[in-house]
Length: 359
Ligand SMILES: CC1=C(CCC(=O)O)c2cc3nc(cc4[nH]c(cc5[nH]c(cc1n2)c(C)c5CCC(=O)O)c(CCC(=O)O)c4C)C(CCC(=O)O)=C3C
Ligand SMILES: [Fe+2]
Image (cartoon, rainbow, N blue to C red; front, side, top):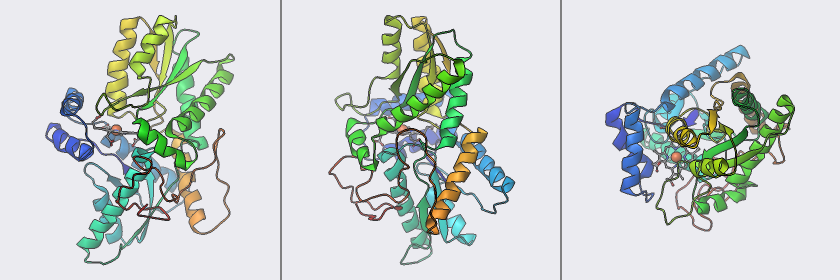
């Protein structure tokens, strides 16, 4: 099951979608109105659904190419097709065990536990529908794959291609989605915080690109898409502020590399391609945005490797978990307390793929 965020398919979907995403999250109304405008700017439809369909198709093709007979369903947390419908369809098709592949490469509440909570509540919904007292399927999860060779290799190619299109001496500005400082702190339990996971990827990618171009490549990590009230600290610097600082200190060219996103969804289309590009233009900075990994062969093939790795682990086999960089492979069965929204605060909401669903 390709498990994703979901996004509106047309103007009428925008507000109900945003209400799904922000239910109980304390996002100010002004921010909601602003984000609704981002969607309406693109005709009310998010690019994310088409991209997930393309990824689903690419996974099906790669599995077929390897002679593996495995159906792939697609389910979202926040919009149709919903996870519960994907699981119900898989169940009706005879599946009793589903392996989830989340479209988020990094581990934090937003990219890990929030998906696992959705799996659990969706399993509850399928059970209710079937009048079962227990979950009629098991959902397992592929580990966070930010440090898997396939994801990293596809990012190296994308950044090297972009680097070839900017004036010499460009800096690489790696970008990811900002999260609240409290969520960052709570992500440490997986072995390294959300920002440390990105720094590890950025370091490996920058080094590989430097080898290809034959000289050192300077780089930084910046953040986009902050929401929440101004009083709440989120990871910084914001990419626009960072471009200002770089221009002020004499940088003339940048590659903006969105390593935090696996495809060109709204944060990339609006926050980077529209907003950050305008900032760069205003500052006279030459800027090129590197591709997201999308359906690049190295990425898709790496995802299938991860699926096979998880299946081998489930069979109790001794598997080599491939990684790049200094961090170890993250767990595919989460430890108690993994990736809470905030340290020390239990959600009271059970989550799948954990040794303690209620922790
Ligand atoms: C870390 C992270 C990822 C990357 C990992 C992953 O990919 O999962 C991500 C992805 C995405 N976020 C998305 C959209 C939104 N995220 C919001 C709000 C929030 N995101 C957060 C974090 C993340 N979000 C957080 C901490 C909030 C505050 C609310 C809360 O504490 O939960 C809001 C509310 C309005 C706003 O304030 O922006 C929207 C509309 C879309 C769909 C885009 C499309 O339609 O193409 C995608 C892929
Ligand atoms: Fe988000």
